[in-house]
Structure formats: structure tokens, C-alpha cells
Image 1 (tube, rainbow, N blue to C red):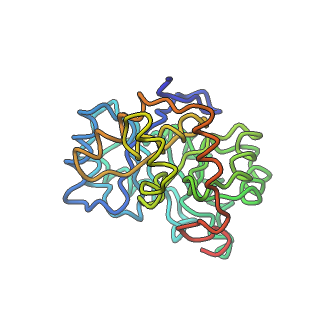
Image 2 (image 1 turned 90 degrees about the horizontal axis):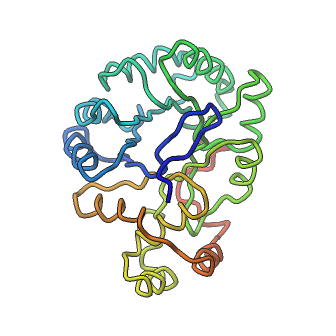
Length: 264
């Protein structure tokens, strides 16, 4: 299985990455270093996570690093990225995302206009969004003519956002799944456990392999060596079309874990 996916700006992004949400700054450098030793080549962080400094300490030169703009800085995105770069110890990030549209603030279009300039200046090699619904993407594309390379959204077996996935495909946007394991809740589901037992792999590997089989990029979080290695091992797991269909059937419109992008 290919371990990279080509973005609409021509760059190749690792499909499986390491999420760092809720990993403390003092601990995350060791997690990142362990992940890189295992084979991870993408690390995802955000200003909101308050661990960019630690992530930066764990990185090597070849690591794809993603960070995100929180909505309290939609009006001054360049200053926010400069602060993130200083913490990460980098001159540029591989991918900079608007973390949430925060439509009530009415500045996400302004933020996107700045991200386009930041890409042109080389501070962000690729730019994208997170938790954007089609109407939000429509608004930023109408204002700039620039389509995001990535839309990182909540996506797991019990909340699949198929309408957003389809929109992203139609517009050449890579969908990257956050909370891909449903914060662990899916791992004890009988349907997942049955497939895992049949394949002789872990439940987490089944779910991550499902994401990959559907053409998604995915950033599961892991805080210890065993989980890091187990998640990465999903690259070698193949789920059948029958297994994919069984997991597809788990979708639940009420399965959202995080906030609604229209409300945050």
C-alpha cells in the first residue's frame, strides 16, 4: 500500500501520521522521537494543544509537520504562524490549517487569505483547513480562488461525514481523519473485534486500515511505544471489501464526539 498521498498542490503527504492532541508538552518530544524511530514521517500538532515546543524538540529534518491556527487569531494569522514556527524551531511548516471555521467570528475568510500569502512566502508549504463544512470551503474558494489541499475532520466508523468526504473528493481535497478510532469507543464494538480476530490483528489496526482503504489520510494519537507501534502496523493490514462494507454500516449521524463546526 502506498504510504503517501498527492495533494492538489503536487506535494506528497504521508497518509498515516501521529496525532499529539492532549499529549503534554513535557512528554511529547519523547513520543515524537519514538514515533519517528518506528517509521512515522508526519506529526500533527496545533497552537491549541500547547505542545508545539515539545513537538519541535522531537522532530528531525525529514518529518512532515502540521500545525493549526486557532480562531482567536483569524485576524492575525501570520503572527500566529510566526509564534508556532518559533516554538517548533522551524522556518516553515509542511501544512498549516485553519483549525475551525468559527463562523460566528466572521474572519475565517480573512484567515484563509492570509494563509494563501503565507504559502506564497514559503512559511507554509501547503495550506488547508480543519472541520470545514462545504459552505465554509465554498466561501474561502470564492474569495481567493485557492482550494485547500487538506480538510481534517472528525471521522471514525460511527461518524463518517460522508457528505463532507464526497465534497472533498469532488474538489480534489484530501480528507484527513481526526479521532479516527472514535477515542477508542469503536475498538470494543463486536463488528470490529470480529474482523480483528479473523485477520489476527488488533482492533485499532482494523479501523486504521479501513480509513486507508477508503483513501483517507489518518492521524491516530498514541502516547506510548506499544500503541505507536500497533497503529503504525496498520500500514501492513488489508481489509476486504466485505470488511469495509461492514464498518461502513456502523455510521451514525448522531455519533459526533467533538463540536459542531457551525456552532464552535
